[in-house]
Image 1 (cartoon, rainbow, N blue to C red):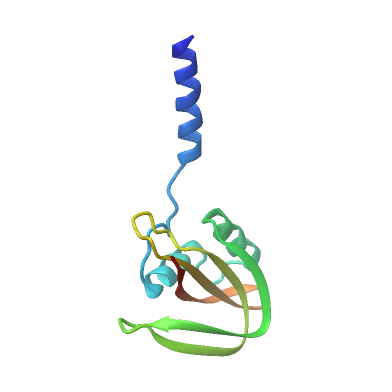
Image 2 (cartoon, helix red, strand yellow):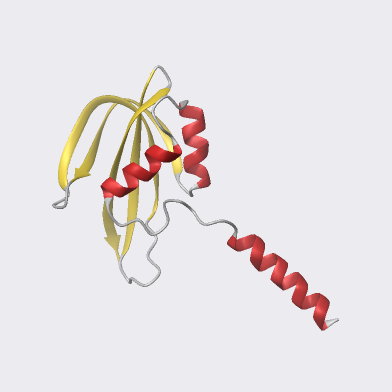
Length: 127
């Protein structure tokens, strides 16, 4: 009986772990944008991009003629993008060893329902 119980626990644990997310443990906005662009390269439909992001643990909504501030370079210089249509995706930032929590915002810019560019922003949200 103990063997069966252990097997059930092992199967449950393996199912919970599953394959790792591509965007897990990313720290830099430009790296996040690059990885998301691999998941949803230019020309990908917005619907497919949204499904890919949701598999990565993001929640998404569509924004029309909106503004998104991305962070660029080592200094994380804010760069504002205005009047764009984009899929805004966000999630809590992975921080297993840190006591400070954060969040990710990703903008998947699209034209005619096809991805054209990916922008990213991260912020600390508190302890």
